[in-house]
Image (cartoon, rainbow, N blue to C red; front, top):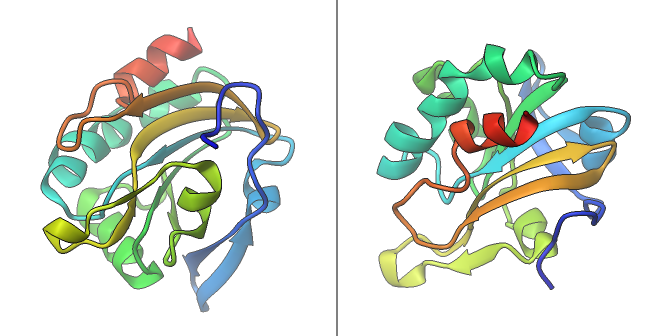
Length: 162
């Protein structure tokens, strides 16, 4: 079953990079009592994700947060080391939280995983952007066409935030 507006996020644990190395961070830690924009990409450093999707959130981080958003987070089915390298390479470190969903458990629990094995990528997350208020989804933009950023763009999130 695919998550929809009004649903609560499932309990999950991501891995994040800290000054002391990799550490777990739960959905409760991230979303409880907060308004968070969460977006997902099929893969860090992949062309569309790196060149077309991420830059919108990096460039619009201040404008998004000015709409009452406490945090912006990105997740991908990548390990924490890749996510940390991507945070540094894309300029998002410090303004966006990078949440590694290494096994794809969160993507599966949302009903938003996809199998890209034919492209050599294995299980990945679909591309989406959502607004989550205290653990409940209040906006969801899902892009079904790989290689395109439309409904999940930072500009669409800004529009949804009013």
